[in-house]
Amino acid sequence: MNPVLTAIAVALAISLAGNAGLGWAWLQARDAATDLRGQRDQARGDATACSDATQDLRDLADKRAAAAKKDQAAAAAKARAHEALAQTILATPPAVPGDVCASAQARVDAWTRERAGQ
Image (tube, rainbow, N blue to C red; front, top):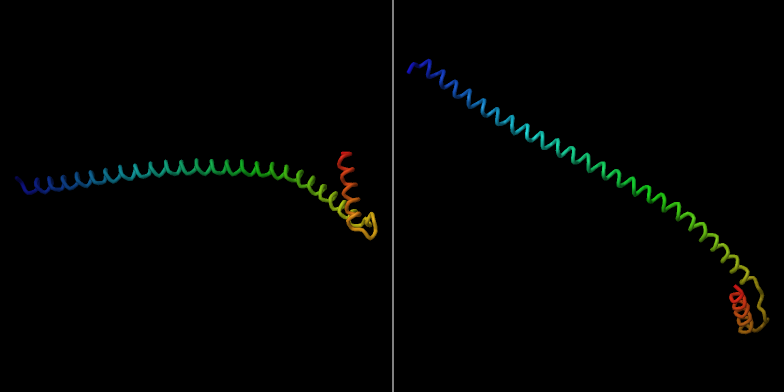
């Protein structure tokens, strides 16, 4: 065989092997890029779902806070009424001066009559 043909054949074989290696590397890079795009799209979808769920929770919290404000206002009004009643009880002189037990019994009797009337 001619040495020039041998050199060309060796160069052709090296070139063929190099092209096969480059083709394999390109296919691997393409597959990796496709996988990364899929992961990116999945992450975007997950982030969107999380954001939507967070907004739903924020809306629910706002609704509950509005409902709680009504209940808090009612409780504050009831507390003010109880405080006024307590101040009245504390300011009321004993029903029977000098007899704590009789005064307490008179107060309980008045409270019982008041409750029975409601």
